[in-house]
Image 1 (cartoon, one colour):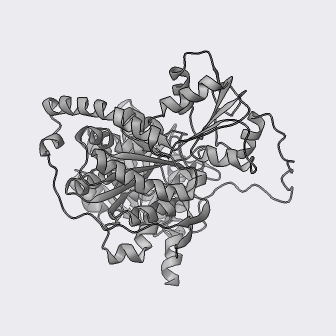
Image 2 (cartoon, helix red, strand yellow):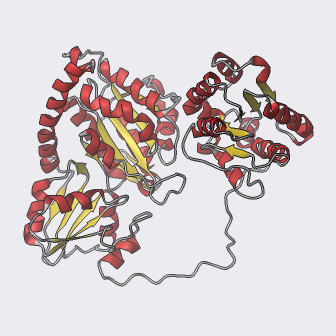
Image 3 (cartoon, one colour):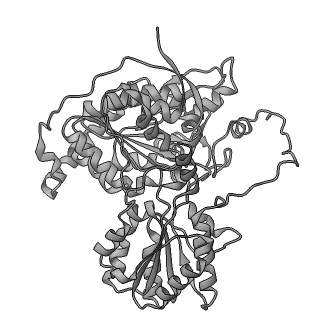
Length: 529
């Protein structure tokens, strides 16, 4: 009897990878990708097979470790949110040049509408940029099935494969049928170890191979079955529906759709199928979640005057998530009746938890900085970013992981005083350490506050890479020991905190203050245990 499981999209990816013979998952937590790794960490099968599933320090180290596992013949999975692709990009793009040995799949979980992100970046561009095969499932069963296919393609062509999902697929549930479980690969080594050494002479050779292989990737896309062409009687419109967009489209046509539909779940785009549709239809509409990635390419592929509609022409919204209602409107159908939100439901903006150590840190910092004219606080990515909101209004910038320290340094280089950086413990080890080294080397006049809540709080309480070692790390990077100060952020310690902040602002050099108190949420969980 087939085993059926009720799974999130993220969990379907994780189970599919486990059943495909996975040996290791490498990831840094980031919504909406976090549950993939957590599912494997909690899996009994993963424990029995001793699958590696420890969190990495950042996405780049995760990608590189997965490459190392692939080098010795094992199947590895890398998971991150879309902005994590920026961090992993160096290793990811070069891995297309080196190729892989054991199957290697990179999952990028995109966040259209920026529910918990800085931008609406579409990771499919990375797949095209690196010239690697890319998959985009339309539902949870496809997420399970296609992750297995992705490992097959990876090993068949010795190439990394990108696997793109979006928030709604990652975080919604459906029944998934499991397939036969494969055994993990045995250790094996590359038949051509030379290709892993990307010196210019080798890289030039590999680039020619990669370009030639793209013809095979295109053929796979045309014939694999992941991309399907469905005939329709009404040729006034042809619809190209990508990933979850296909799922949304078919919700409105339970008894069959009158238009021809090309379902896209594998890239490169199947040019022949698109040309076949364009030859039959008066106009085309592209339905995709994210940026007009396919729409732009379709415009470039066609030279027969067929009108192409989508996000670029206004039929579908240019920003935010794709929704079923947006598709109804684009097709000229009558949308369902809309109900006004209840006036009894009061909007509740996000806020730092009651009892959070970040609150006391910001209270002390605000009081001290009130004594200075034009003080600036450069913050970072984490739950402490909520210090931007009332009642604290304590920070002046949030750009990307690690930017707080380097921005504070740059401002100090220009004469800003005081120049303060606020960064969390996990973010510091993710991307802040190199910035601190720059500041030390330049003898920058900045204060760095590493708000240490002993966990990766923003994404649910995962382990933080530097826990228990921040003083040694900062001293090793060259910060003077007497200017590495540790405080416990509690109301009863407010006077001590303010005094330390004041002293370190007045010191002309690099200071590090570490307000350290466990996240209130993880403390509660530990207390229950």
